[in-house]
Each structure stands twice: as C-alpha cells, then as structure tokens.
Image 1 (cartoon, rainbow, N blue to C red):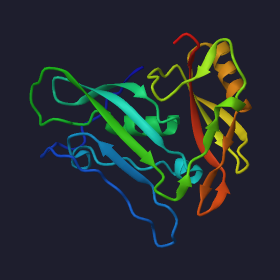
Image 2 (image 1 turned 90 degrees about the vertical axis):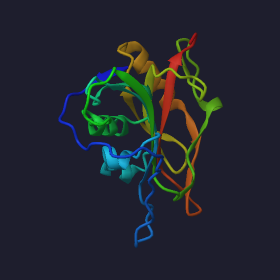
Image 3 (image 1 turned 180 degrees about the vertical axis):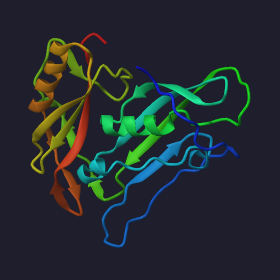
Image 4 (image 1 turned 60 degrees about the vertical axis):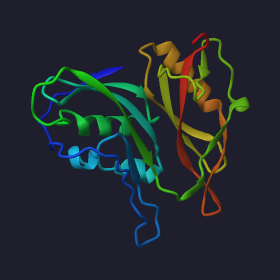
Length: 218
C-alpha cells in the first residue's frame, strides 16, 4: 500500500546511530507508553517521537508498524509503503503523518532511495500477557484465513476488543481490501473468535488486539 504525504520538513539530521527510546512508569504506577525505533539513525533527533495516541493508551492498543520509507531527491520522506500494520489504523496513521515530509537526510541532492523502518508501539510492561488467539475457536471461511506471522500480506486488518472473559465484544475494519464482501467476511470471522484473556498485575483484563486476514490461496 503506497501512501503519500506532503508537508514541511521537521528536523535536520546531525548524527547516525541506533538509539531505542523507552519511557518509565509514572508516579501513579500506571504503565507508561513506550515507543521504540528500530532504525540505524537517531530518529528522535531527526524527526522526533510521535505522541502515543491517547485513545490507543486508554485501550492498551499496541503493535508494530513496518514501513518502507521513500526518500526523494531532497532527502525528505515523500511516501510510504505500509509493509505491516500495527493492527490499528490509529497507530499506523500517527507515525505516517508524523514522518511525512521529514528531512531525513541533510539538505542536498540525492538519488531517490528507500529504507525499511519499524516502530514498536508498546504499552509498556504492565500486561504480563497479551490476549492470545484461540485459532480453533474461529469460524471457517472458504475465502479468507487468519494470517500467520510468516505471512507478509496486509489484505485486511481487523481490530478487536477482547473482554476479560476472552470474548470479542467489538470488531472494526482497520485496513480494508476494497471488496465489501471480503471485508464483511473478515468481520464475521473475527467476531466468532475467542481469546485467552490478557492479564495485568495478576488479573484478567479487557484488551485490544488485531487480526490479519489473507486469501485462502495466498
């Protein structure tokens, strides 16, 4: 999926090195959002960290957004390929909007190039376990299947809210296929699934998760 944005540049790069960023718990003891960059540059110095969306924090939404950054002849980020969704559009769009037009390389003239970039959206270490899908509980489909980690396609991404009892209480299309029939089928399957509940400080809790769907023959 190619997504292009045009904005003014943000911060000019001054150095290159790997520097993961992490935040500690706040004074109330509540887990603090953690954003980590996996990229051979100090992204904090280049483009700054995006804010962890408040709505995502409230729901404990997390995941990994993997992008191919397309850098133009001026050293700016001109477009993106979304290689892997974090599972929630709010996270994917937050980082894409944030990086759009960023002056990733020192001002100059370059051959257009691309780089792979991974942003780990992690709601800190408060959850001792995430909600884990019970794949056998999901209804079967002739057209779609739930993607495995090894599958790289992003045909359809569905965000689900899982109750403390492991039931799906809501399912929302995050990235659709453009085919209404397939999108509805993905929701049907997602709503049928059950999860082993997430835990927080020894208690079962509601948690946001996501499912990727691809064609049966993909």
